Length: 205
Image (cartoon, rainbow, N blue to C red; front, side):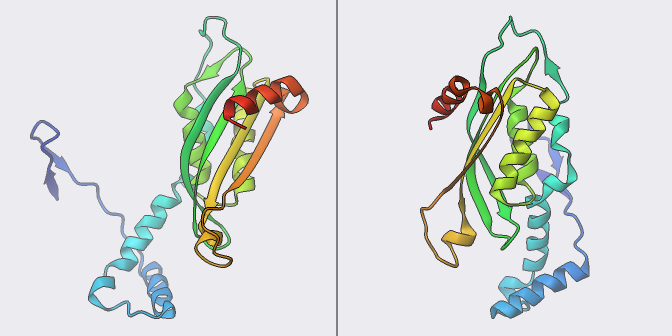
């Protein structure tokens, strides 16, 4: 099927194909709808199982990639720059592995390069590669830091994540507005007090 998109010079562009959803996946979502107390066969819910299934494939795209590939291309021509590189307040979304509820937050990622740097957008791609999986915030923080440490081999890596967890804010204890902060420091940011204070100050902590 083709859609007309006036933003593409009036050309006809192909609509993205919808992935097929296996019957057992749809049945599982229908079962959950029934168990929640609704009727999966009513008009408003007839197509919901397919929509939910496709949405979860999108939420969990991180399983289909190796975030380290985003760090494979580096640059050495940086005019002798060998100081801190910091990307602040990167927004991300994930889902907790305990309740499959949304985790919404932001991350600050820094590293002290040796003789090469990476495009700054790649740091956000590494974050999203790990975030688009079922997660706990502590592991997400550690995975991002380790990936950068292993692949860029910098003098130091610092990752700080702040997030709100719907499994806590929308259910259970129900405490909206509460956020969780985690950090992982490696190399000079862990071993050198001056470097640690510098990076945390620039991150706003």
